[in-house]
Amino acid sequence: MSGDRDTKAGAPADLFDLSGKVALVTGGSRGLGREMVRAFAAAGADVVIASRKADACEAVAAEVRDLGRRALPVAAHVGHWGDLGLLVDAAYGEFGKVDVLVNNAGMSPLAPSSTETSEELFDKVIGVNFKGPFRLASLIGEQMAAGGGGSIINVSSSGALFPQPRFGPYAGAKAALNALTTVFALEYGPTVRVNTISAGPFLTDISKSWSEEKRESTRSAVGRPGRPEEIISTALYLASDASSYTTGALIRVDGGLY
Image (cartoon, rainbow, N blue to C red; front, side, top):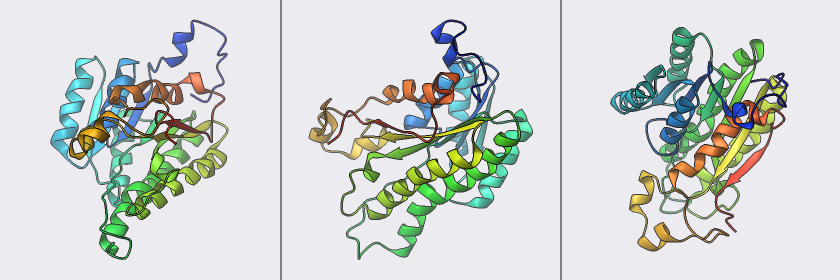
């Protein structure tokens, strides 16, 4: 995973092979997280699925096992540092390592206004979108660097690049996550690569509350929201040896929003 392998050898598809790897995905029970979990398993990885609801994690774990891979479902709230310590202990206890960490869990509640944003809401948004990823990447990144290396993928949002009113804490937290990618790429390199996927609007569960117009079109070069499976290729690229010379990068997967 550190990129020491001669990437010129073998077929190009071999670069995306995750056989023998262990991936941990937060927010892995639905939406983009579930798509990445399934893709990693299909590429040969064993997977740790983390989200707040144990039954939802177990349901996706069953899908992973159906693909012939091992799965560990763990109920954890990423905004609680105590939960993250237990999550890391469970992952290393079961598999002995983590090769790929995806900080995917997030929340983006709409506030009435900036002045009407409660302290509780502010802290919750910052906790899930920034504080949790900081702590989890710290705990796992340090172990990756001390071992054989690895890949950390922070799932950010176009909201950090195109911020709008009523989403201030969310946009700020995701912008901070973007900065954190550079911090950890430098701190844990050269054997640990750390990158950001800046996701645009996708037709996941959250889109069910959108207007019909918003579900059909976006102000972008592609002109439509993404299908959940369209996150897979970028996630596999960053998780695998295919991206051995890519770190500290922000890759927009948003259809060309403007």
